Amino acid sequence: MPHAIPPLLIIDAGQPVAPLRRHGDFAHWIRVAAGLGRREAVAVNVEAGDALPACAGFSGVIVSGSAAMVTERLDWSEHAAAWLRDAAQAGLPLFGICYGHQLIAHALGGTVGDSPGGRTMGTVEVACTTAAHEDPLFAALPARFAAQVTHLQSVLRAPPDAVVLATAGHDPCHAFRWRDRVWGVQFHPEFSALHMRGYIRARADLLRREGADPERLAAAVRAAPQARRLLRRFARRARTLATILTDRGHDDDGSKEGVGG
Image 1 (cartoon, rainbow, N blue to C red):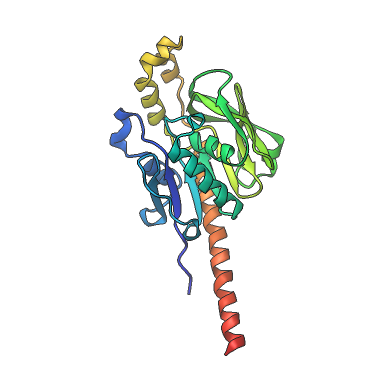
Image 2: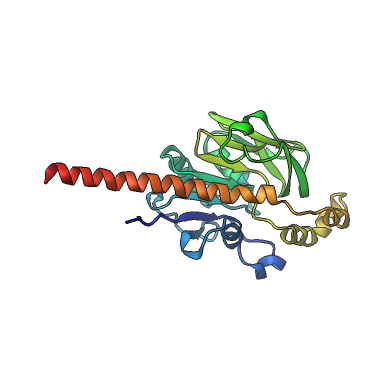
């Protein structure tokens, strides 16, 4: 008889811009993009003060973006970083998005800071490195693919034991893998084109003050299906690994009972 697969944990580190909240929160966007049913994911909002559960009951973790900055070293953020470091060391699959990407890098000894090119927003072209060809999630991607981005900070130096999987514009570490079960991506695979245009409109005045053209950025937004598929690949990989470990655990229990009986 098949055993239940533990759910994925979504660590929500913020909220979408106000005009887009009618479409749900980040956890909802991530769950939909990852192809997870309501019972296949559990969300905690660490920015709002939710406590992080024990990691043993989950098949993997996805960390959302946030309007906060990792360099602010906020209490809830540093607590989440320590939790993620322990989870990574314990072998739990992790996937960080934007702020989550930066937070995992920080937790594992990388360096996060202001992006050399300043604010980046819109649909950009991401370039895979040669290391991506052998990566379980990135190997199926083309050498260059579109992705949605909105960020002011980035990973300036990947953590020790990490490999850089992609670059984009001024970001030398737009995606990385740490060892064999932890990933971070600066882009937003959970964003649809609608989400991206909504962010540009919400930040239009700010973008103009910074010398950017929000109308041009919005017009250039296009779908990014290759980036979006990474979330499904991660969820499938984490759940498959959890199934193997769960079945192995039950087999071990059965063996022990047989020996003792």
